[in-house]
Length: 472
Ligand code: TYD
Ligand code: MG
Image (cartoon, rainbow, N blue to C red; front, top):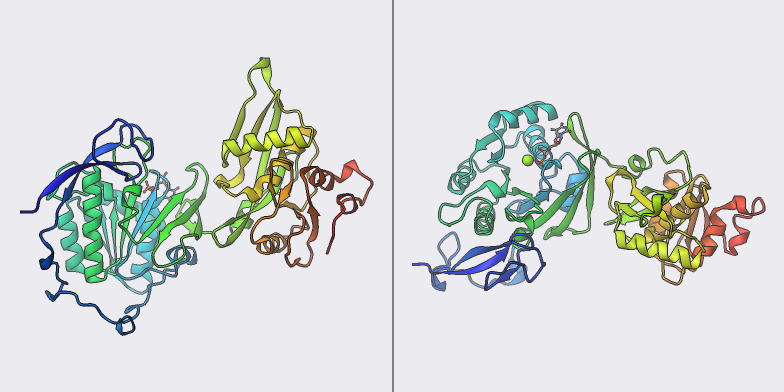
């Protein structure tokens, strides 16, 4: 008889504890610890391979390399995030908030496999009725007979169907609706989610079918989130984006078969998702009109540079309320820091003003390389002077107001040049090739950047000289 012991696991972060507590000792979330049964496997000797022969050590060079090649999907954006296509026998978790477009994305993937080269895809769903799924699929493109739909939440039935059909791809939407009858707990509990995923993982490896799992991210902790599964699966992708906006970013958080730095960009429209192979162009859409408070920065997402427009609005606080600072698309603490640096190093006086900062396109900036651009955008709105047309701003800002170097400057400059920007403010001393058509100005401090960026301040044509910099 397999023994079982009980521990507790956080449905937010997957951290384990021996005792129940109101607050998770790992991630400090409240009320997220759930009972978790650890089943002891029956003793070791019986753990043989599928063929019934015990495993023996094999010389490394005698192991066959990837037996079957990756299956490439029609979308380059999706292949890129997966590390070059779908690896047979891999398990990929696609996480994201409800309504962000996970089911839509996977239905597109299903259609690309079933449509293009006549493959077979099994779509097991416990989320929606077959009619709803058909309606969604019909919006995306022609219905393909190669997609088999299974409305099922019982894990045994799902595993059996995958085994019997041996499809080129199996999709389980979502892992939080699936239950394994061999375990206690309702669907979505930590035990169920983990055990079901582990079993699907074993099945995928055994028969070589790739399986995509959908996992909802929840704030409440009532159902176990994808983080509980991150250690189990091969690849973790998160679909992000503002539901009210069209841009969606698929981000690799972990990938045993490729880089965990990559992103894929998509746009949600009337007919489902579309890949966006040139996200900078999409994000820069209306940056052509420069207005006070708008700045263009380049951030790196994985290996890709993205041109992003940021906007600031600085307003006098009404009725002596405490000033508000609102950041959408960036960390609020970073904004507080930038405001402090602006006050101290550029004599800005923002103590009596509300400051709102918005990153266009629903993108979230996490890179300090956008600091200088943000600071200039706030300065621009405060002083009611637009930044020059065609300007891109690159640089991290230190507490002393110094402009610090950023990684991969050359890549960023090329992206700016490719999209027709004509001037760049960059950290002084950085070594990088200068693309043709881009006037590059090195700045050492916030004050230098301000005088370089607002030429109306100065004699005409002083854009370069005033900053005392080398230009190529
Ligand atoms: P869905 O894939 O069901 O999200 P998830 O599985 O992550 O919960 O996507 C739902 C949202 O996508 C819904 O708000 C409507 C929108 N949508 C479109 O805008 N266009 C479309 O063609 C489709 C299919 C969905
Ligand atoms: Mg869904």
